[in-house]
Every structure is written in C-alpha cells, then in structure tokens.
Length: 368
Image (tube, rainbow, N blue to C red; front, side, top):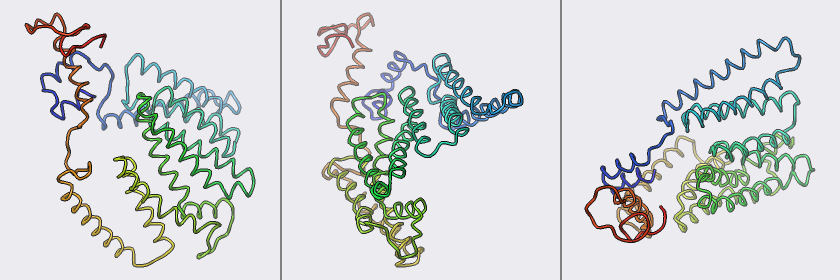
C-alpha cells in the first residue's frame, strides 16, 4: 500500500514500483469491489441453502432443535472461515465477509431467538460476538456494531434501573460516546492492524454523541419507549438543553476540525449540519420545503465555489488542490525501502557500497 501510494504521488518511478511489487508479492486473494459484492451475495445464498437443507433433514427427528442447529452452523461457519483465510488466502474477497457475518448472525440467533431474551441480554451477546470477531478479523463493520451494542447495554440498563436513570440515559450515552472517542483517537496510531476499525468506531462515536443530544432523537425515542404521550407542541424535560446540543455540537466539530486539521471532525460536522436543518424544520416550519432546499443548495454551491477559489493557494494549512503528502518521514521510509531493495549486496551494481548494516547506501545500520 505504501508503494502504491508513493508511486501515485510520483515519489518513485514505475520501474521502482514494479521492483518493489516483485520483491514483496501479496499472496492474498483480493478482487475488485464488484466481484467482492458478487461473491458476498453468492456465499450468503450458499449458506442459506445449506442451512435450509440441513434443517429439512434433521428437524423432524429433533424437537426444538433450531437454536442448537443455528449455534452449530455458526461454529462450522467460523471453522470454514478460518480455512478460507489460512488455506485459500481470502482477504476482503466477499467470501470471508459473508462467512464472518453469516456465522456471527447464526450464532446470535441460535442463542437469542429460542430464549426470547430482552434488549439488555441481546445487546450483551451482540457485544461479545462482535468484539471477539473484531479482535480476530479486524472487521470494520463488526467494530461499529460492537460499539453500538455497548451503547445498547448502557441504554437498556438505564431503562431497567428506574425513572431517574431513564431521564439521564441520553447524558450517559453522550458520556460513553465521548469517552470512546478519546480512547480510540490515539489508539489508531498505536494499533496499526486495527486502525481502520478504530477509525470507523471514532466516526460512530462522534455521530452517537450528537444523536444522543439531538432534540428529535431524544424526544421521539422517549415518547415511543416510555409512553409519554406527547402532543404536538409538547416538549421533554431539559428540552432547551437538547436544542442547544442540536445546534452547537456540529459547530464545535467543525471548529475543532479546522483547529486540529482533522478531516474526520470536519466531515462529520458538515454531515451533521443536515441533521440540524432537519430537526429545526420538523418542529418549526418557516418556509415550504422546496424553497428551503433551493436556498440551501444555492448557499452550499456558492460557499463551495468560493472556498475552492480561495484555497487554490494554501491558507493556514488548507488547500483545494490534491497534493502529495508533505511528511518527510514518509519519504524517508519509502527511500529506505527502495535502497534496501535496489542496492543490496549481490544485485550486481557497480556502485560502491557504503554505510553499515546489511544494506548499502544512506549509512543504514541494523536489520530492515
């Protein structure tokens, strides 16, 4: 991946990129997106037909066996997944994705459906399954589901605790989301194998933090789950505070994203501006929706065009141009890789070998 990125940014030549590719071949089966989707659908169909066939064979002889059969099928699914990964070298091919999700869902259904567990226990089982799957396979979507299941555990705990806990449930969800964000943000660089999964959890934490403080979300969930029987125009306890959260959190995301040059905060903040408009428009009709959408589109296009023109030349670290990374450390790492591959002893080069270590050039020392 680093070699492809360096080649696309003209840090290395085509010949150097080809030499790196030949020196460090990737043995995994990784098809393009469309083939991946096709293999995913095909594998899901195979799993469903296999489960149905086995069910038809043994269901008459074993009473109440659907739960146990689903658990067995899920276990076999994980065994097959390990085989496809270790033997067939599938990596994000669609087949391994389908097996992972098929086995996980089958295992959960086998545990939950026959016993009719409530929301708290279901959230707990989902959290355990998805957390273990994330640790083993570093699946990004599994990581997000595990995080949402954790929030579900907190929410249903508040629901079953009492009226006071119900009232503060949104604040507990906001606190848990904020704590998750601060835990995940530095961990992305520390645990590189899980960086993509942690990035998705970071985005989910930012969105859940806003959703737990959004007036529309809190009012409608409270009304439907706690039988408040709110009438049009009625508000909820601390409604004014949730209106403040609804309006200010996206603004804070944008301001913090600009300050820290954080693309995640910037993009999530821009996305949540649409949630502000929707929430205000839902309870306060100022103009017909067609006029509001037209005005909003004009404002956004004008602002986008103005920013693109203004940022043609970099302003405080921001630019509208696509430029290669300015990180000299990245360039040094790529240069070291090229030197290590090209000028090692025995390549037949007539250039003098200098420096220490196993490889020549650049004064390299130690093992690469």
